[in-house]
Image (cartoon, rainbow, N blue to C red; front, side, top):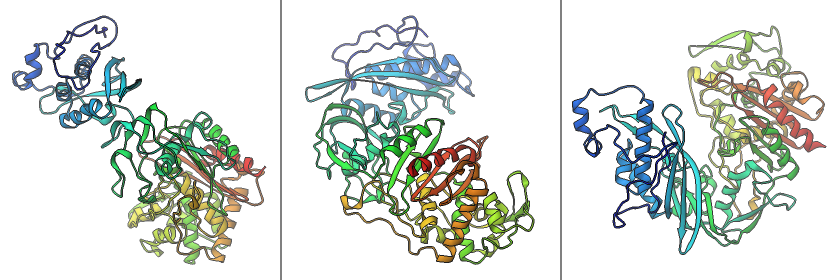
Length: 572
């Protein structure tokens, strides 16, 4: 594409929501604004006329159409013609609102857009602007992208509107706002008093955002002036421009925190101590960095303290907020249920056939193995799917849901760890989906925080809600389970986990960590994903950890080494 020189000059009196420079750089060579349809301004302003004269085009837009549509949209946006830019999208109302807010709320001026090289229908571009607020100015630069789509009604190529076109971190209902921050900054400390920074721990950015949003005011800081993403308020609360107020309780902790993009004037931070261990956190960062999509959490079973959390992707916090099928690690909860219901006993014979049919589905084991005349302990250690699903007909549809909620504290939407989190979901299901849920598929959803808590509960017998900030800081109430594991069930569950760590699918990863240890592996199939997500959860002494490596294969080989290395590090 050619480089665009300064566009035809506009009168200084012409209106512009986003004022300033109007040069759009688009590649090699300079050219003025042009019509997508080659018919001058009239073709742009009256597309129905052009559409009525030509057959409606179908299929993906061509490279030329992508180039033209993207260029015209970026030119209109940059020049401040919001109405025209919005009309070049497939949702003009939403585009108008968000683009108007860039000048009105975000206080952006002197906007310059530079288009990159298209990849099929997707066009990357950079945004450079000045953020101005009450006499203070700072430059802003970031990259974004747009995708050109074809409107079905007339075949016209348009920008497929998403909030992420304006900024890649914007979601539906989010806004860019410049002003006094809704909450003061926070100086977060680890359990030893060391400051937590993203320079030291790269994956803690979302955690620090969450700590600030909840505890900024409570920690005694003073807010500065910032450009930030203000998230759409959670239905359970939130204070609009300032994000969550921190006073509505942690039931809104699934809300993604507001995000600071640029600091114009610094505030005075308050100080907040967390439960994170500096050595384990550093180790967790190192371990997940070896994988493209890995997440891990370490907790202390005796207290619930979160000692480490890390994600190889530094955006969404999968470790705390992920919602993924946990695969066979869920068999810890299912095993507890079967033992409670006297449908299984660790050392008694238990069926593990190649196949079992339930609810019209035919389930099988990995590689279609079977264990003849084997014990339930052998089936658990080998991760035999049919050993669990064969018992589905003897259970109620809500049996697993009750076990998860009443014993393991899962799926009640009441965890309050100190930052946004998801506390798992085990919905009531029937027929084949109920059978699949027994092996961590179906509608069951978890994350590493949940599964670290599950193995910690199995180890101690009592659910202790994980937390990152002590409840004494804000007098919040931690979630509780209505009952503990019975002595019989806990003893057998520990035996199952210890045997799996010593001689089952987790043995290779857990080698040398015994005897006070236990583990469970898992693989979760995901639609349209060639390899399953690999899960691993384990305890060693008073440490419990869980990890997932997405689209990587079996958990013992992928997530296992990550979890085991942290347990080894923490026990030294």
